[in-house]
Length: 77
Image 1 (spheres, helix red, strand yellow):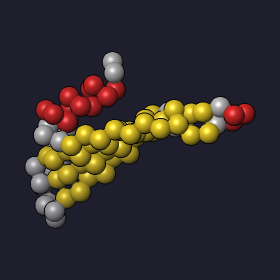
Image 2: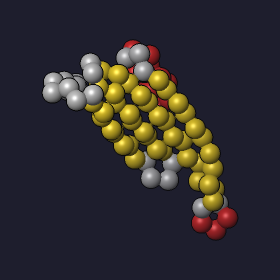
Image 3: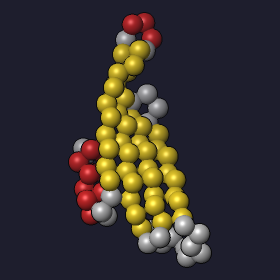
Image 4: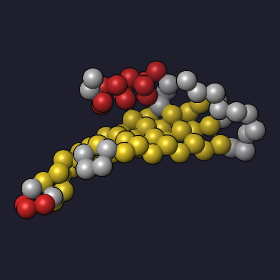
């Protein structure tokens, strides 16, 4: 599975916004570390989900969900 292809599909299916950034940074002993950051902004009901995937050096994901003060629960699968 290609992460970029799958994340683009998820954004398209959910009317979200997709951004991708690739870069290299210095590593140990003159090496370089290739880093890919994928940013998704997906609306769901009255919520906005901001998701950042960081592949390369740390392989992490950060999820932030913003609400407009709505008391409804966020039903995700």
